[in-house]
Length: 212
Image: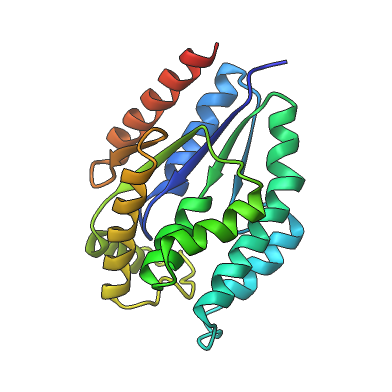
């Protein structure tokens, strides 16, 4: 059995995570590394149904606590149904977002409290945390500009928030990054896609080398 590893990718809207994760997938396939790639909220049927409620642009009346609880519920189901089984099989799990998103978005930007949202998610995950988190760092203006320039991207409810909300998300992430600095590594996401990928795969390779 291979050594399991839980890697999450975090960052604001338009950070380019999806593009880089696909590149990492290709690298893993070529090297024969056993892995799964998944996302939050979603990844499995029940969580995808919850995702459709959370991100529906028409759900403008959604209360912040409702939003936080829905994310935690989706996270729980995804964890027990997809993430933990893959880790038990010795696979690397590549996950687009996890608990840090809730801390930054709902805990800080929605002003529910980082500690309060962390408590909800500790209950939901039974304290299962990533082994490595890669944070894509870029300004909200750049991220939102990329979204506006990408005609193919379907804008969700969070994309439509005003700039000040996304600025608070960035502030929240900085607090979270400092709090969990032992597992979170920051990457400059304002570089070219190639440079971002080279930074990300280098970080992952270093982590893989340490667990062999």
